[in-house]
Image (tube, rainbow, N blue to C red; front, side):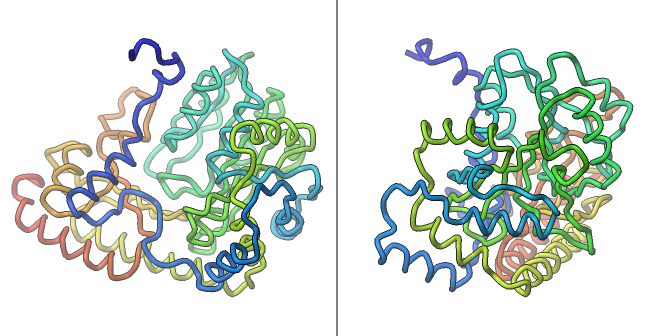
Length: 398
């Protein structure tokens, strides 16, 4: 009966990240593949969720109580003035907010530009909408955007540009100059911009996140998507949002209601507590994650990985295999799971272009998630050091 499935569903492949997570679970491996914390959410947030359930916030909830706080924060952090009543759609995580956005703006045959490497969900949503993903390669090792190359990808069919900053998988934070390039291109092409800003509060080395919508002339054509998940270590709560001009937000809301009706009510209520967290919370978040980043970067460097770009944001290190490594990213990850009991993600799953003279660099990156407890990271280091000591002569041959 496979031939009875829709054409759209047949275009999609299983998520390699989730498959590796399942393999890690079956093998009892430490999971550095998937970007979810293995430490508890803040106690006051858990208490707020329990209280919401006890106080009967358990039915559909269409009154979007958190929008006032989001609007205030957006104005304070980015200088973006939005209407809390009309410009927000509360969704089941950023993933649904992004999907509903794509379904609201993309028609069959429309082209959507994405920066490569890219998170896997974006392409799937575009394909389901009948759109055409068009990938613009970022230049390693700093994953920089070349203005002249970027402009070549625009056509009369370009409907939107997708921007994820801070960026998964590389940890890049797009510079103001790069954002200006994207802004000018979108305005010239009269197209939308869709941003994924889930790591907006997780930046390092005094790097500051800049929302594309804050640039001159961009708010009217930008749809911002984000969520509680990464900032508050509650990836399972599934509270996210899209923020857009009222007419666009209305279209997104109509699709959201048809797909999921409403986001989880008790977690919407608990989100009020999360979003009212004091500045000290966000400072601690950065400080603690920066320490984890430095630990993993140092660990991988000692093991022989090339860290030519230290992540400026997100919760991932995109590490390059040693130049003398004899096997590909996929082969290495399989051995790492089976022999060391540590799971990571082959970088190849994030690449979609085939640049000339790439020297197969796309087969040489591995993504490691460091949003894990100190105990987990220490254990992973011990296992990987043992793995390299025992298997390194077979894998890392000069």
